[in-house]
Amino acid sequence: MQLRVLGCSGSDLPGHHLTSFLLNGHILLDAGSVTSSLSLAEQSQITDIFVTHTHLDHIKDILFLADNLIEFFDQHDRPPLNIRGLPEVLEAIATHLLNDTIWPDFTVIPAKSPVLTYEPLPPKTSVALGDLLFTSCPVNHAKHASGFVVQGPNSGETLGYTGDTGPNAEWWTFLAGLDRPVKHLITEASFPNHLEELATVSKHLTPKLLQQELKKLSYKPKVFIYHMKSPFSEQIQEELQVALEGYSYHLLRESEVFDF
Image (cartoon, rainbow, N blue to C red; front, side):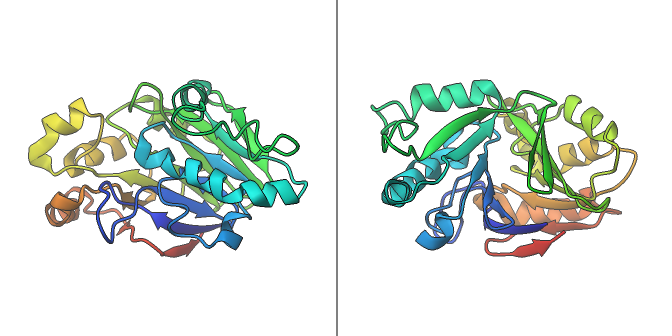
């Protein structure tokens, strides 16, 4: 399982790309910075987008990706690109975004071969794509949000991705009930500890809150941190050194590639 970091920042600033991860060259986990990170040829290889929630920093490049690929789909008879997520998440995208007011509805154009289609993934259900199994689980963020667990054919190939989340029990209970431990976990630390009230209201985590969440697991995955708000990045990093003592962790950076 190969993971390429297209964007992992909680702020849209020069040199900081919004959330998007590319799996095995053709599957996206969120779509905040796809078209600014991938060539047109690479974009044309994408088959599926797993969307955690509908905040713009996680979905905005669905719009521009579809626009970039319309000619490719018109000339090639290939299946639509699947947008996958909670039913409520897909409904929000259809109603408020791909609605012919904000952006064209690429689920019906081009007529002979539409670019996009919706594939709901209700909570705790799974879909197999090749040798990878994707399972959704609700998390505490936005009106509706989920994280995903990706399992490969080998026991060590297990990746958890919370997406944006505040403190919650359901996600960690879900991980604890899996048939194998999550070896690698992508999760967030958006705000420094002194902004815990803001983090709680906006359903995000601080280093201290993340520490409390991780203790809900009986084992210690390798933790990959994303979504740090850039103005607080240095302080968050210092606080993570304390909060994640005893854990193996890594601060994600754009363009990094990992083989899990």
